[in-house]
Image (cartoon, rainbow, N blue to C red):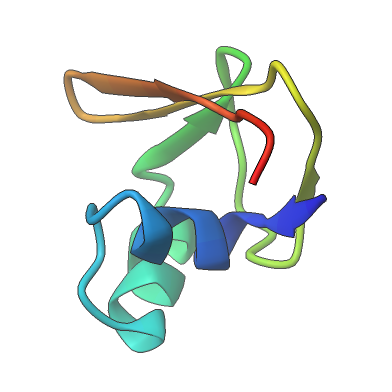
Length: 61
């Protein structure tokens, strides 16, 4: 499992944790099609994270 804010940094969408936090709080991030505002949301294998027009699938890390 990985937290949403950490995942955004890992895939390169957010250069810093602070930037990831702001993106999440502003409602710019969806998990499995639903807006997610909890930066500590734990992601599991197969979850789909969308930011703007980019979608990423959580894989085994």
